[in-house]
Image (cartoon, rainbow, N blue to C red):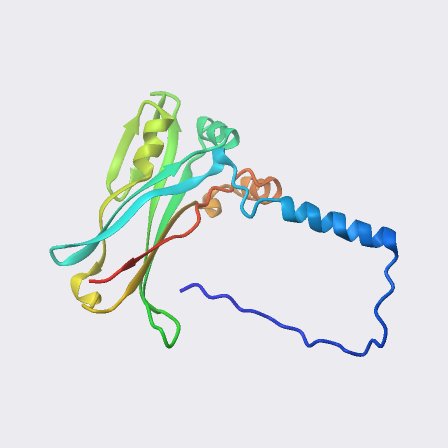
Length: 207
C-alpha cells in the first residue's frame, strides 16, 4: 500500500506590516511562477516510456490470474548497451489491496517477476529469459513485445478474494538499475538516461 504524508507548518502572524518587496524582485517571482506553470505535469520521454496497454485479473480454476501487456521502449543509450553485451533486467510488480472506507486499504498480496534481456553478437539475436523460459528474437522490437506480454500469471488463490469486497489492483514495469554494474549505476544517477519506469496502473475488482 502506498501512502503519502502531508506536513504542515504553523502560520506566523508576528508581522505588523506587509513585507515591502521591490518591484524588480516581484517581477522575477512572477516570471518564475509563469515558467513553472507552463511546464507539463509529467514530461515523460517517448523513447524511455513504459506504458500499460491493458491489464486484467480473472478467476481461473483455483487462482486469480493476470493477463497484461506493456509497451516498452528503450533509448539509444540502452540499445547501445545491449549491443555491447550488457544485460537489462526488467521487474514487473503487482499489488492487490482490499479497499476499506474507514481505514487504509488492506494488503492482500505483492508479487513480482523479472525478465532478463540481452544481445548475442554471435547469433545477432536478442535473448529474453523469464519465468516462461528462454526465447530468442531477430529484432529488438520482437523481444520488447514479448517482454511486455504477461499471460496467466497466478497472483493469489481463489479464496484470497471474498465475494462482496472491493479490491484495488496495481501494476507497473521498471528497469532494475541495481542489476547494472557499479560504473553504470553511477552513470544512471548522474545522467538520467537509464530511467525506464512506468507509472502505476490501477483498476478495481469486485468478485
